Length: 257
Image (cartoon, rainbow, N blue to C red; front, side):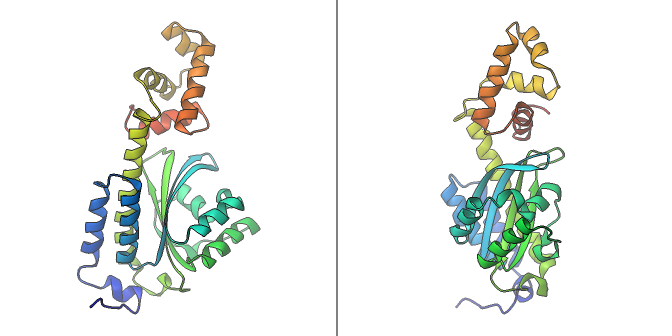
């Protein structure tokens, strides 16, 4: 018989709470594909004591957010509606994740502006009336950032106690999801995007701040050839410019930053 918990505080007080979440998190690294990871996201969400979850990984360029990838353990209509309404760029939860690493209860954020308010209202109607935001960063100067958002349709659910222990488990789950996604990106950079040793050489030059003119001189090719190669590479990597391509390759461990 499965025990029913009346509140988050009661659930996190269970003696094996963190152990159960840890076991789910450990299995993520061994997952072979997205469907397996999504199943573990669902399992981890339930183990944590949340009812809904979305994991999103995105690229940050200055104040802009782009190249979002979603994994859902909730009604997919929320994601579609948010994208169709153009709310992702204004989503205050993603903005928070882009600049902070501390997990927080979403209701503690100050929401200003009609577009940000619309994003929150849509989330609330989609099973995130109460929510916890768990940002995951790879390190200083990171390009790729992830956010694990855990939700409940019950207003005030996370605000009524138990957040401290919940946060520990949520961080473990978020970090494993982020690392799995980075590993997948690393694989795709080499295999699907066909990033060759010559491309990595260009990216190392870019990390050192070298101009196309200098790179062309060192490689004994034309500057236009270097620019064309960078353009093809950024397209394959799904990033807006060569600087971000170099940062992404460094984060994935393909080159030294």
